Length: 265
Image (cartoon, rainbow, N blue to C red; front, side, top):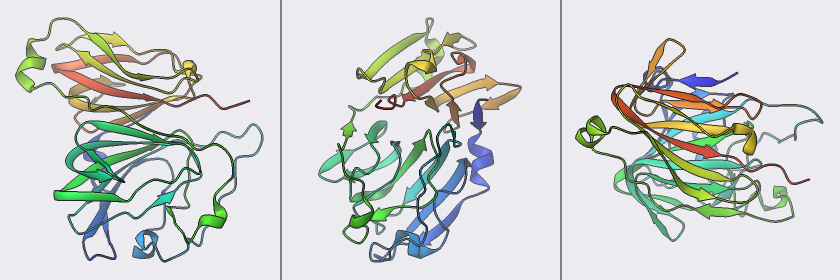
């Protein structure tokens, strides 16, 4: 089953929480269970999350998650970790993740129990997606309060180079579909940009190369199962699905594909 949610549908779920600095943190849920409680305690670095994480049982497959976060200038997400692998993709605004400046379109990967942050928005705020192949509903595990919950073992953090989206005029004039490799690692971790001309088609790589793929429409639109998915729409293709066949709308389409690494034996 391919998960797909249009940006317009996700916008109906948008709500805000108050950060300790006084600014608002907005969240729009696309698919999967809620990633954290809705109260402002879930963004307070001094509050220990009340929910305990239980790893999947043998053979259990949990649904993916996709949600959009908007941080106002005075809303910092303090250093933390999560219990599952995830990508985050900056789509608007600017700021920094830790010591690294970020801009659209930039993606980073944080492995399970890998600390990162703070996520600090610039003057114009910061908007980014969080994407997971396996759901985690416990919220951010802020440090140092949640340090005892962090699993031991290897940590992994990868910040990819920015990928510039095409201007609408350039995309409309494109004649051939191309796949640009942004990042590729031996265990399947990968980031690609698919650029497709108006009404064109392009097959994505097989999702079985990794542990599934999240896709974001960053420019233009695509057609999928009878619906139009415009800019900032999100999809997830499980690893046992066939390769995603992208069909661009009349203005063309650009799709950022994020492939999760295979589990370590």
